[in-house]
Amino acid sequence: MKLSVAFAALTTGIVVWWFLVRRLTARPWEAQGTSGGRESAGMVGPPPARVGLWVFLAVLTSFFALFITGYWMRMGNGLAHGVFQSDWQPVIEPRILWVNTLLLALGSVCMQWARGAVNRGDAAGTNRAWWLGGLFAVAFLVGQLLAWRQLQAAGLYAAGNPANAAFYLLTGVHAAHLLGGLVAWTRTKLRMVQSSGDLEPVRLSVELCSVYWHFLLLVWLVLFALLLKT
Image 1: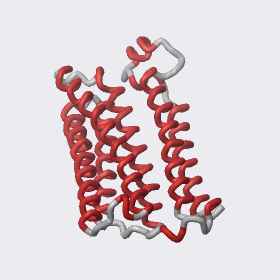
Image 2: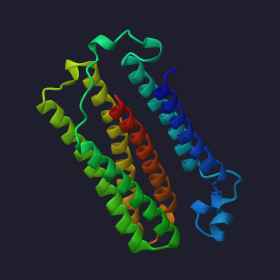
Image 3: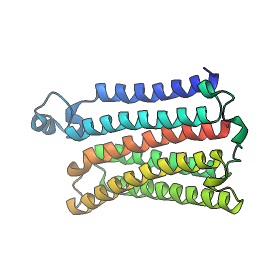
């Protein structure tokens, strides 16, 4: 196994380990906010929504790990060493990807800010951080679209080269999952409006969305490092 493949596997393992630690050390009443919430929880395990998210993230981790492994092998590494190298022409990554990475990182920071604010009962801070987290995510998606446009302007279409197709596939799958996150972000924002400043109904949703944003940031960092390496 090549060193880079081992690095990708190790990174994926660290991501899974980090989320499992967070999962196992979570307290069910934290999502409820107060000691009254602890009594209303009345259960040993965490809320079903939190369990569902962790299961979903575990599936996504395996999903992206398979994509990364397939990408690496298609380049002619690992078990496919020397098989496909003749038709693989590496893509020069658009520089805007660096800006996009910064935007996604800022979005993750803002979502964590919103999580802290909702736990403090700071409605104004939660609202401000929530809007910024969503806007940075949208800006990231726009930046990814611009990166695609730049490749197409340079004549690098998906059908022209396996490396091109892999770039579009990896970035597109990641963007699709972020779009799904924005759906949850929108639903939570609507609930914030309907609750008229009462943060208790959205406390768990804010927490889960922030975890999802952090996960997508970690996945993107692994994907981006892999694209730069190749």
